[in-house]
Length: 122
Image 1 (cartoon, rainbow, N blue to C red):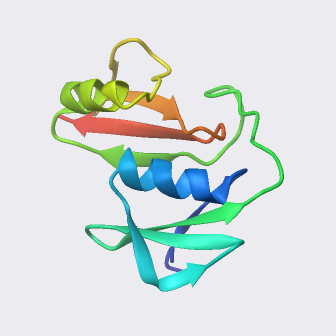
Image 2 (cartoon, rainbow, N blue to C red):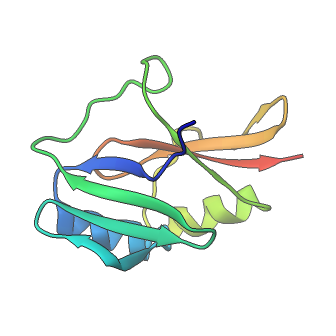
């Protein structure tokens, strides 16, 4: 059986990505897994690990119309998160949260074109 070890996010500028994922999304830089200049490991409570990997070019994803991987974050108050992140410059794909069978969600792109979603379950 396989277990997910971490999620890798390819970014065009590693130093800017470290700042964005730590300052905007609240991840912490791992001191145990730090591989500059190619990659860094970020951690969040619950031991969720993201590996930021330096790529040559930003991605051009056509969300939600293209096959892709999407990291989904969970919150108890999506509208508050949307307000807080908007104040930090995050641009959401939809102007307001959208409903889906299990709750509400919205999506945003990081500065490199990677799409992530935030959900609030009923």
